[in-house]
Image (cartoon, rainbow, N blue to C red; front, side, top):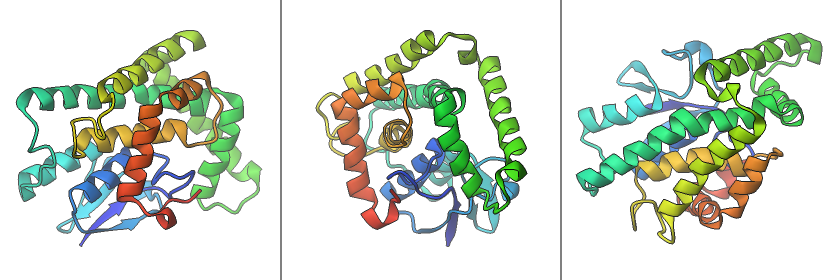
Length: 242
């Protein structure tokens, strides 16, 4: 049995990590039997991050590489119906979400003080630390600063709030324009792009964070409907904690 190591479900999404939500959804689309460990045990992660899986007695990290491994070793490809040009479009959008939109999500969580207070409390609960705030506060504040430093090195953190809004919402608008009135991004059936978009969009519109980026996303009705559609098709209400 494959074991997926991820984070707890909260705010009506399977994981507060877009990559974790993506991989769990992909496994369900692909109908790969697995069990889920939601303890967020990063210490055991082979690449020092989640998600990762235990597969044939080995720990395998990185959601993208895990998907590619299943294609190679198990012959499982939920994108087999796509043409070569559709695969190229899917890859481009997935790279956009992973390498660009991701940092906009991080900006919402780590940069905005009122959002950080909410997110910090969630992280503390995930650590399972019953110590008083002064016990975990320094660690989490260091985590925040490290993330903001990474965002600066990546480039997005060098911009003003208005510029970050412009950059991130352009990603969301592109996704909305491409989805249009289709049930799924590539047509009638969900593919890897749907799993990926769901993981990222869900982590923008579902958490209780305040941001113009969130407000913009909530106005893109087809993206919100897509998120709800993925919830209903692949997750039961009992699995998604509010």
